[in-house]
Length: 190
Image (cartoon, rainbow, N blue to C red; front, top):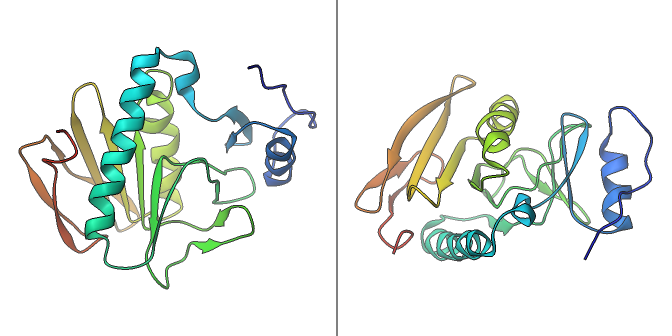
């Protein structure tokens, strides 16, 4: 099924344009004032899409067991970070009393944890554009899951800059500063 391009002004787009595009149909992200169809998997093979979906479910199961409070959400739900940036992270968590607040159809402010699952068509944005965006807006922890290499990269915000906590495989675990718990990865890569 083809989703028609929304009719919006030319040049840099804003949250208002993102809302109009979303209401017109389809899912969109707004990154640096550019409207991008959400779900880079549309250009990828079906097997990759299934792999992505499986990892989303496995991560939800893991996080629901260990999050101390707050709310866990999954795409497609936009997070308004500023007037030119509304990403739709694969998963995000907001601690109770945190800066990310629920709007009518989206969230506003930086979540405490964001997880992106790489696909061939989104990896570059996940590793660069979104990395820089999440760092700039103060997302406390950023996880990048590579389903093909079966690795999880974990970054934690220290003095306004991401520091890599580590790259972990299924046999490893790590202490999450944002969650305040030990994260065992065995079930995620099962």
